[in-house]
Image (cartoon, rainbow, N blue to C red; front, side):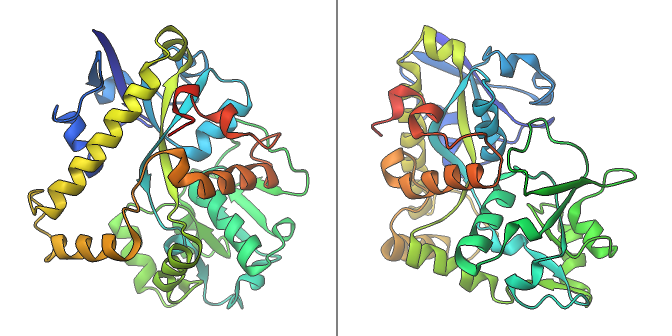
Length: 328
């Protein structure tokens, strides 16, 4: 039996996703393999650890905006169509309330801060602003903490490095250093500060309605993290990619069953079973894996990456995903 490591991007792996708990608990298994989730000491930074570039690893949970340019740059890895984490993006688009920004077009000529130009939420946000609101992305200035690991291939894009010590884009917005910010916010203290200050606001006041519009009208619920398989494992054990996909998919199905059976132990939200029942009735199971169910958003993300200079070419699904998963 092959032992496969499951790692997470960053210094502190986080495997609390409900859709993979059955896999971690052994209720879903990878045929012919055992899964070993890695502890925080097993993983250095993704960009600084040579094993990821050389494909000498098992499975990895990673931001889509990091792996797609890595594949474009020749790193030895492939994606599985296992969209392990999804987040709507309009929640995270904040602007100063004292800079005359009331519509998306008002962002033109302004400075937008982000944790990383290629991060998934940043890519989707720019794409949606351009596609749905007609924003000219060449008229935006981007401010990041440091240079990204990969080149930006669109010369019309302006990206500057912030001076001084690293700081979150949300904090730079609160401090008045930038006009707008985007990117994931997981710090409750920062979120409360943004919501309580009169000098900042959501660009879309009813951002929940905008998120629902994307889901209802366009069938888009944006994945931000994906599972990646190392190139060496993929070549040596070509069946593992599909077997791992099948295990993640079975885990997802069990997690849905757990939630609808009210067997998950969630205690911070009343009526979870009923909420999920109603969501599935209206939209189907929106946390789906597989390429056929996610073709639209995958192609959209690859389009955006090329248009925005995150990749040097428009990558195809065949170039990004493991061959054994292309028919999922």
